[in-house]
Length: 267
Ligand code: 15L
Image (cartoon, rainbow, N blue to C red):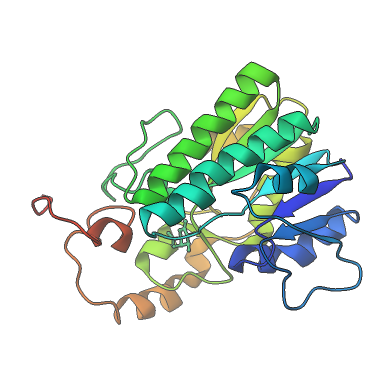
């Protein structure tokens, strides 16, 4: 795998992983709505609006693999989510099919499963319980990926990403911590593992207090190099500054669950 496109390259996660990906894929091409501010001379860039199929197809031309981080990365108004994450995600897979791309790694999210209580332990067979319009769009993206894999033979890995960063900033992020290097390891599995048809994994580093069963990722060869528990003091210090949130503290999705919440208090 040499020719790889990274969508959402100007976003927070895209910015963190660009230098790591470049070492592995020297021909990496970046894409986003607008050029990243700090674009380097050795970083080819193709601007594309995900809501415009022709632009996405032009960005995908000649690519063997796509790492799809693009779209709206938090909760937002329905029309924003609709264009960036529903229309945009469909366009991305359709463009990949038309251009003969072999693999797509889809950046799904923990928010596709956010309404599972923190006390539960969920695997990849559990049904979606999205906590937001954003979470619904991620469940949709997983479904689109599965359809393109089964119907058109595209190899697709959906990674239900937790929280990407160098350190988890509170208790929820501690349980879903994903170091950028471990994310890149999962992405490599999606692009390079010989037996990817359609797969779902959780995007978390090694975690002793995990809410998720990530055995499928381990079976595919994932060996995270980072450990959430190494940051426990830092995370709990951050937690002490969070306001109480009876709904967000109960469910895995945190404030994505409590925002706009009108159902009864969970017990
Ligand atoms: C996500 O899916 C978001 O993209 C990111 O901004 C964080 O909110 C993360 O989840 C999280 O759950 O912390």
